[in-house]
Amino acid sequence: MPNEVPVVTLIHAEPIGAHPGRERIVALLDNGDVAVATRAIGEEKAEAELSFNLGEAHRLSELALGGNSTALTMPGLSRILCASVIALSRAAFQAGLLETRDDDPDTEQTTHGL
Image (cartoon, rainbow, N blue to C red; front, side, top):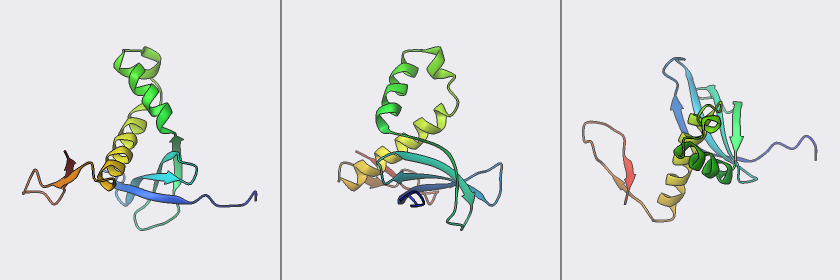
């Protein structure tokens, strides 16, 4: 169906410091791709920034670690790598490979570690 809306699973939402009232989200699409988008906090509809699959992110990581100048200057690289870490750590946590840790009792955030 051409007007079918893709199914997305929200993985993470982070307020955007430079834009009060907006947040950047990481979501898993029904085709397995990871999407990065922005939206007003509390809204469901978001504006897509980029999407990628983890194989692409893996290859970009290898190229960047190797100092490839094209990879290092690719628009969106930092968001792709950040979203990849979030998606993969969430998947590892859900699979029982990581546990919740409270590394800093002065914050409300928890981390996932081995």
